[in-house]
Amino acid sequence: MATMADVARSAGVSVATVSHVINGTRPVLPHTRQAVLDAVEELGYTTNTLARSLVTARTRSIGLAVSAISNPYFTEILQGVEAAALEAGYSLLIADPHDDPEHERKVVQLLHERRVDGVIVAPSADPRGLLAYLGRHDVPAVFLDRLVDGPQVDGGPRFDQVCADNAEPMSRLVTHLAGLGHRRIGLVAGRPGLSTTGERISGYRSGLAFAGLAYDGRLLVHGDSESAGAGQATEALLSLGVPPTALVTGNNAMTIGVLRALRAHGLSVPDDIALCCFDDFAWADLFSPRLTAIAQPGRGIGARAVHVLLERLAEPDRPARTVRLPCAFVHRTSCGCPSPSEEGTPS
Image (tube, rainbow, N blue to C red; front, side, top):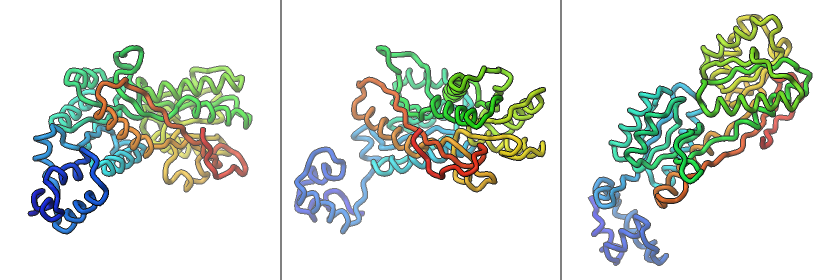
């Protein structure tokens, strides 16, 4: 197996110069850099990651804790994280916390014990154990998708956070349905305690207010962010003396549960009840009718989280920040519009 000294002899440079080219630790003249890269290619040299980590105290690895198996939306985020990490020369260790607070803390601890340089986490509804562990061990961390109201530092967030805008896009769905004449608009919201749930409920209520509609607490039900819970929540809405004429769902998994419940009642979308959903997904335009939705930039959120974490590793003392990415309104036919545009516009 070729060594760094072999590369140096082949390129006619010092071992230190080879190290600077491979690790990017100091600028090297373009022709010298190319000579080193040519030697690396010719000799088939690969870096000894373990040895380098012993010297630098860095493993060039990132831990990712998201419930990707149970939530298809997080699969998109995972793809964004993986692509950005690979581009930056980092490997990825993945764990599924199953949206369970105790399991969440355990998997993050396991990732930390594997000596990852930092972690990216989609926190649960009760992240107190997670926050305590990260703070106690001073683990570089970025929260994605869901915000955490942890201890504040100088008026700002304690940890870096990356998420989509939630309130305004949800408000847009509600006002769109109100503009179509609906006066009883139900919301199947996510799991209580999640920042995404709270922000989308806020957007729902502001959309009602903007449309001049009174808020009716009976029209807001929680589907626990998953399909089965959303089906039960929809049953509750349909059992009201005056059921809603339109529904908004809080995520893609709940949309599936709502559609199943409506089908079980023999209700047609949008003829019997209009439907809009927060979260677009790959097969949303294959349904009949095609689903009007808010599309979140899942891959963009994942990639941005990696960039923010790498910035944190480079500047450990810089102030933490929260980054929000815009969503898109994707206008299809489940809302009841006769011929909507197929183009998504920034929300």
